[in-house]
Each structure stands twice: as structure tokens, then as C-alpha cells.
Amino acid sequence: MIRTRFAPSPTGELHIGGARTALFNFLLARSAGGQGRFVLRIDDTDAERSRREFEFKLMEDLRWLGLDWDEGPDGPGGVSCRQSERLGLYAEWMLRLREAGAVYPCFCSDERLGALRRAGALLGQQPLRRDQAARGEPPRYDGRCRALSSGEAERRIASGEKPCWRFALGSESIVFEDAVRGRQVFPAGTIGDFVLERSDGMPTYLFASAVDDLAMEITHVVRGDEHVPNTARQLAILDRLGCPRPVFAHIPMILSADRQKLSKRTGSTSIREYRERGFLPEGLVAYLATLSWSPGDSVSPFSLESLAGAFSLDRISRSSPLHDESHLLHWQREAMRRRGTARVRQEIAERDPRFEVLGDRLDVLIGDLLDEHPLTGELEQALAFLVERPTGERTEWMPILASALGKLEPWTEEELNGLLRAFMRERGMKGKEFFHPLRLLLTGGERGAALPLVLLALGREEAVSRLAG
Ligand code: GLU
Picture 1 (cartoon, rainbow, N blue to C red):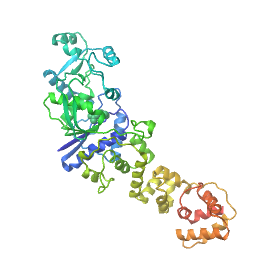
Picture 2: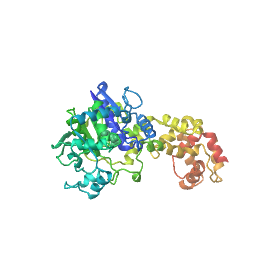
Picture 3: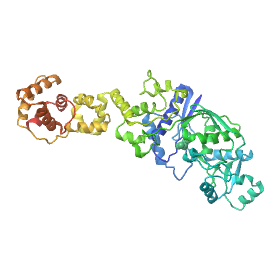
Picture 4: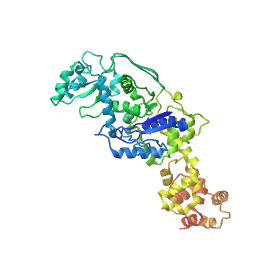
């Protein structure tokens, strides 16, 4: 049995990185067929920053991408998958850790911890490595309260002081075999005793997540590599309790084209934004599947089933992939082509019912414009001239052309092409002299699809009427 989970914190929208993590966990579970389960867990122990609204949005976006779960906060599986509703479980495990002497109360004030942080080094221990600091890791605690006698600790608790509870790390290195990054070693002393329960009684993410992975019998944890240091801590907890370790696979962070962390500054990052811009879910999935993994040529990247059939952790690359919107657009184009012009036409008509009357006359034009306008919204704009007559200047030869068009038989692309060229030649006009004002009057623009296609889409009656005035 393979059990994976995606465990977002509901503190913001689903972004490219989170969606790829969700996808890989989904694919790994589905790669096991009936022997796999994909769990959606909501890591909402940070009550201040967590919002139900974000949770709903996350679920909506995951569903839109086609990543459905077998167990989740909305009911399937029958257990609550929201950490805020599982506090009893964490309390039980806390008790076990206390009984095992694996945790101790810490009374250090925020001021003291702040001072340690500011000093940049913790009382004689090595300062934080730069990469640790950059990852926002908490500085190592100096272990002061570990030395308190249990009598002293009890006395202070009885007198009303509210300690947090820290894990007492052992003196051995923490070592694990990462399915993507290989062997990871955290020598003893590089990690400080970390907090499992805050002074308000709430478990920290580190603790709740370790307990949940165990309780939910998660076999594989696939997550971003910024979590590697958390893994060492979570393994220390599991090891101390003699519990089995899941397999960990840390996938490299997605970077912007200039190799920076993705942010608003470098363009869209949230799935919702892409959705609103008119990207198709299957195009996004196909794109996400290429970030650190490659499905191979024999796989249809637009089918989750087919992707799942090919998915394995050992083919995930160790280097950071770059988020490149031109690649995403490539997959979008392919996805639109696969959907077919008839389906795209229906979507455009759903966005704006005025397009309905044009029926399948739109199809040729859609096929022609798709490469340049692969997003439905853009396509709709590029086609707007069909339902909104532009105001252009009418030259004196246009009514004559209108009457020729009125008589043309058959009304086909080939015949239209022949008539336009013959008309231009007969009047001794140059291409630009003829096509430019014609296009402006019919479409209101200077560029676009070939004019015979424009005429076909407009239909004879409308075309003649626009030219004749
Ligand atoms: N809630 C964590 C996050 O959103 C999940 C980390 C994990 O996968 O354990 O980063």
C-alpha cells in the first residue's frame, strides 16, 4: 500500500510549487492503482494565519486540476484531516513523549530567545550556517531549561508559569536516505532542541505533522526541499518513539527564470490566476509534470492516468527547475488543440453568448488564431470584431466589392481568395492599398487571420452589409 499526502497550510492560495507537490503525491498514490491512497491534510495549527476561505480555495483549485483525494477535510475517508480538529491526538502523543522523558518544559522568555537570535550565535554553539538562516530556520536553542530539575519545573508550572515544551535531542547524528537527494546527514549538535508544543498548548507544525504522518500511515512524504531540516527533526521524534519512518522525497524548489524564488514580482504564481487568465487545467498539469520530472515520450501528459502509469520517484531530478511561462503556453496551446475548436467555441460562447449565432463558422478562425492567442480570454478578444461592428472608413470601391461578394458562388475560402485577388488586380491596387483598409473596416484591427477566413466567419450577409454601408 502506498499512502501519500499533500498538506498545505491554508494561509494563502495554491501556487505553482504547491500544485506540483500535490501532483507528484497524487501521481505516486495513483501509480499504485487500487493499492494507493492520496490524503489531503490541512495544516492549520497556526490559527492566526489560517483561514477557512483559503482552505476552500485550495480544494477548489486542486479539484479543478483534477487532483481528487481519497481522504480529506471534506469528509471522504471518514476521519478529520484538519489538524485543528486533531488536537486530542497530539496531546496523547505528547503524554507519551513526556513519559518517555523525551521532552522538557522551557520557560525562556521571548526576550531571551530574541536576544539569542540577535546575537546570531547561541551561547558558545556554532552560529547558524548562512543557508540555515536564509531558510528562515529558527536559531538553535542553547538548552538552558534542559538543565532544570523536574522539581523546579513542576514548581514553576504550579505557580502559573506557562512553558513551551521542547524535544530533547539525542547525541547521535540524524541520517536519512532521501529518495531524490540521496543520503542526508545532520551531525549531532547542528540542530537545537525544538518546540513541540507552544506555551498556549497548541502543537507546532513540526510535531503535528510528524504525528499525523504516523497516524495516517503515510508511506511516502513528497515535499519541497525547504523542508529537509524539518525532516531531520521529525525523524528524531519518530525514532525516539520507535515508530516506522516514511520514505522522504524532497523535490527541488521551482525558481524564476532569473533563478530567484518565485514571487509576484516575476509574474503569476497562483493557480487561480492562471485559471482566470484562461489556462486549461490539463495544460497546467502537463507543464507541472515537466518540472523536475519528465514523463517520457510514450506518455500522454494530458492524462493524469497516463502520467500516473509512468511516475516514479527515482526519475525526479535534483536540480531546480525554472518556471518559464513560454513553456506553459506551449502546453496550453497543445491542450487547446486537443480540446478541439468546437469545444473552444462553446467556451467562448459561454463567456459571451453573442458568439452563439455564429455557430461552427467560428471554427476555422479559432484554428487560425490559436497559436497566437492560446488563452480563451485573449481569443475572445481577438474575435470580438465578429459580434461588435468596428467603425472603419469605407473606401469608394468597398460597395462594389460588396455587390461582387453578394453574388459569389460557392461561398468558400478558395473562391473568396480568388475574388479578392482578381478585384485588387483589376483596379491596379497594391496589396497593402487593398487589404489594409479592408481589414480595418471588417475587423477594426491591422493584423489577424487571413481575410477569406474573416469573411467566412462573418457570413455573407454581415460581410456585405459592413462593406456596403
Ligand atoms: N504545511 C506545510 C507547508 O505548507 C506542509 C509541509 C509538509 O508537507 O509537511 O509547507
